[in-house]
Amino acid sequence: MRAAHFLVGLLFAVAAFLQLDDPDPIRWLTLYALAAAACWLTLERPSRWLLAAAVGLAALVWALLLAPRVLPTFDWANLLRAKDPQFPAVEETRELSGLLLVAVWMVVRVRTLRRPR
Image (cartoon, rainbow, N blue to C red; front, side, top):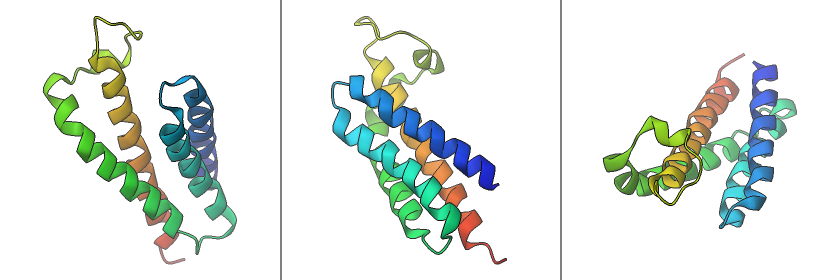
């Protein structure tokens, strides 16, 4: 499981780097960078599960705030479409998906850290 957390942390770090091209990079870069840090920092210090819990909770709350705008027009195909003015829901669909991925993985991270050894 350690390898999985390392690899997902690497994917979150790549996602953070890709946010440099985003119209609002700071909040997204911060979220993905903190998610990567939560995956990596707890590999050696499992007692530091609070960061993963905080990042997961923040991503979940953010997703819940975004969901009412996205879900009425949600379409999985929007994840695959290029950014196009004809499809304004594309970016928000991707944002919601990213938030849910972070939230779910942080739950997995906390559960594997809090499990008795």
